[in-house]
Length: 267
Image (cartoon, rainbow, N blue to C red; front, side):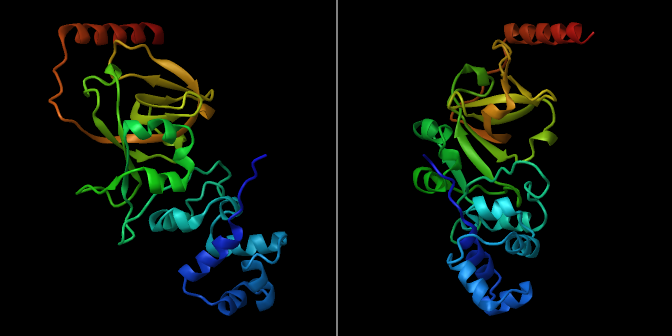
């Protein structure tokens, strides 16, 4: 039987040292006995009181669930600053989506690359495994990238992406709050049940389903349950080794027919 790993004690040490505080200084700030705090941080107190959780959560402005379940030393300085700035979805009462990332020697986030050879491992759970992200995925950087956000590159496959050619590398920005995603947002979607990665237009529906539409109108759209999705990476750019072919007259006609059908259904 698998058990959830608890990071609370290691997170206490990591956060304190990150703020360059001694145990004595932090225990004074929290109003906790020094010996009690030391035992707590060293894991000698196996069942901390709820008051201890609340004090640390309040001081660091990070939700209790996050302190317990997320290895904060692995998520990078940018995400830590967002958490401390109040962008902790656990505190907001939702389900947190923290992406595992890597950083370079200057503590800047890398762009991890998910090639075809790593696709199955990534979609079958590697996306949530910091060790898989660290050891199995190539890392690189790109010029002129935004200063905020986490980015990852995936190798796309199939004709459903046309006019983006098969085999193109698609870079996306990690989306935490799916409720704010505009309808028909182009994105790489990591599907749990199918253990697959797809590049689609994504529409989050109020009934808890997600409509996935191919860029190529020849392919029919389909619907999945929102809990079948592990990650959404909003399209940022793509690179390829061939010039995309122009749309044929047939594709144009099919797209117009699709738009006409949608207009009739809406009426």
